[in-house]
Image (cartoon, rainbow, N blue to C red; front, side, top):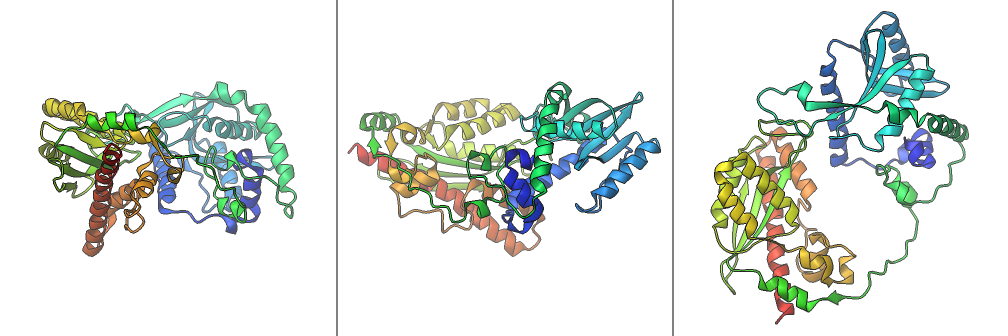
Length: 440
């Protein structure tokens, strides 16, 4: 798969692994999540033997163990490894049923993705050319319709999708690509010449970008001239009514639902910040909520928020789809608050809207993300000095608190989370002030 994305990536992976970019915590968490989901899926076919190698250099032993387990009559093998003419693969789960073999590859996504097909096609090619006939090949992925109630139901957590028809169409490509990449790798002293481009991030970000982009001079992009549509901005501002509630949520998610009422990758709100402008010229008041832990009640979050929002006045968010979707989910979970949530949704306006098309400055770098808009319009405010400076880090930091033992570390992280979320809504107050100033 590395070679299909970029031959240079495969060559560097094999011969210059020390040049790989350092993996950050977020990426490590993604890989660990995939590993954990894979292990969990083995429970769909319990009682198997494990052919995993002791390390990434011992796959020859894994190939030998797999052959031994098949010969001995084992019907479920985890991480079964096969080799054919210098091509090697390990399939997550191999199962024998009614004298036929079935292969399963586990993905931590909620559906089969386009990039899964050549991956599975390669495994099918190697396994069948190594002499084992397969009746079917399937992708096991998470079922996003599953909602946890009580103990985890493995059968309902996962969905199984056959991809045999798709991967059979890829077999000629796999053969040609395999031959081409093997030939390329024979020259360990000559790195393939591949220019940087879109392929550096598709289907996954390459982990040698630091090496490949080093020394490349890029032209200063032209972000055009400033553009301000005063009429459109005035129309937006005029629909805002006092009191004004500037709100922002933070959430965490996990591939495998950990608590009742959760589904795969449910966005679990753990924090909000609200700055309230009660009247024109009044000093904004700040309200905040930060859950005690990942197990904290969604009802507590919702009721605390509704208590702050009241029943009149505009509710401003930055990127309405996120907060609105979370509120609708909470409303379905706690229908006793339907009327109050619907009231809040009716009052909600998106502060991102004018920056999408009616207010553009070169300093925004063609982005309407608040992380670009804020320094362009309110340069005295910055996320750079915060311990936690973006939503991804906030989510990871909060989720990891359950593994943090030192109470001082817990307190520091919680303080950093509160400061970050407060900055998001204070930034909205300041941006609205800029939009109002345009119409003075």
